[in-house]
Length: 167
Image (tube, rainbow, N blue to C red):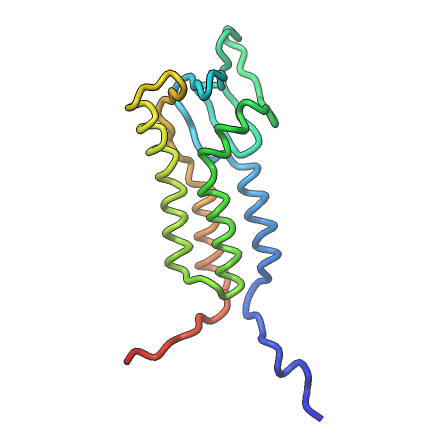
């Protein structure tokens, strides 16, 4: 009688669920970027200058006169945070997909680089068009999430990539 486990594919390395858990914690807790000026998006004021993550921000609010508040789950800020953090979310998805054996290391790194460049490009383009609806200063990425992801994919073994013969 054949062993049933022999027909199941084996995962080499770390479980994608464990990686997803740690990367989600890093993405939610560690700052993703720093912005330098007050931000108006669709006539809503945001904090500035300060640091932001997906669900929180720390910075000066217009009119607070030196008080530096901590904003957590602010509906007006969440619009901006998800706009700037969409590629950070995709980076986590790509890392999990890498540990599932669905994508290559290079595609993970490419999305990670885009996650660093996108907020800055978005801010510069938004400032350049100078619409009254969107006015953003400079956004500088904080590469903590990117570096943690790189450490995971280079230090923790993933599944062997399926090789295709070169003809």
